[in-house]
Amino acid sequence: MNRPIGYWVKRLDAALEAQLDSTLARVHLTRRQWQVLNLLSSAPATPAEIWDFLRPFDTGDGGQERDLAALVRRELVFLLDGRLAHTGAGYALHSEASRLVEATRHELTAGIGADEYAIAVSVLERMTNNADRLAAR
Image (cartoon, rainbow, N blue to C red; front, side, top):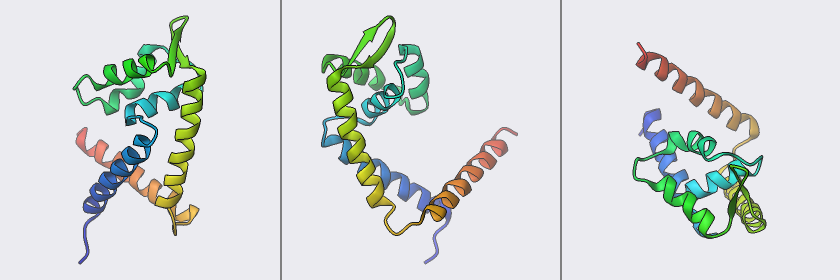
């Protein structure tokens, strides 16, 4: 049976979420904690910059605050001159998690060529932009 794109997008989103959660659980991280460590891997950031980065993922349940506090409590990040940065342990955990996430991404894209992947992302991006444009009318 042919299914519409929305069906496959929802199925893929759910599968990706579950797989990433499972992968990150192996190193005792939540998705938001991973996102913060990943953001900080490029440069230290202010708490405001982190909130802005996480805003699209905010569920309104206070999870962002809890996850950030957990990173501080676990001594994975620290505040220096008003900016959060990795500790040595945070850097090591980010590196380990990055390897696991990359291995999972490799498995998830098995049998999909780089060109196919780029086309799929491009099509989804354009469809999203079209939907956003239509919703703004």
